[in-house]
Image (tube, rainbow, N blue to C red; front, side, top):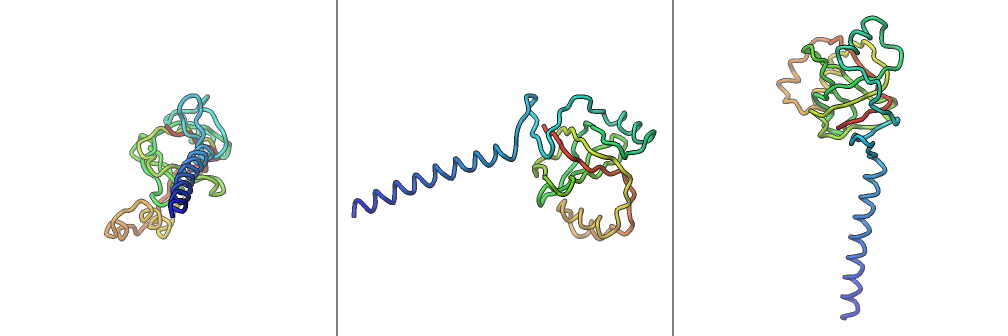
Length: 166
């Protein structure tokens, strides 16, 4: 009987240690940090040559948004279900919807308020009512707020291939 109890205890301890090690290695494989304490998602990028928001807006206005561009800003909010999109503050009372290329990576659910550097393509998009309501649900807005959405909304959007968050 004692051998059975000891075996169960040894197995339990081994399982706990093994799971903890796997959790640590999984976190390490999904979140790599650069020397500047950023969490990196998607393609590996650096913060070098990232435009601030005013310069980014001027560049998009002048040249359009088809070419890859790197910009630094602040995350207003993100999808609270998976982190599959985020809104970045444009410092003019508006925000830019950011999605991730090929749905290939997600941001942490606690990303709101954090600094972000992202590389990708800016473009203008009109979000239909159904999509706007879907995003409102993802944000966790109350149903009465969701029901107020009745018009499509044109807005600057961004498809990121890589992001750094801190």
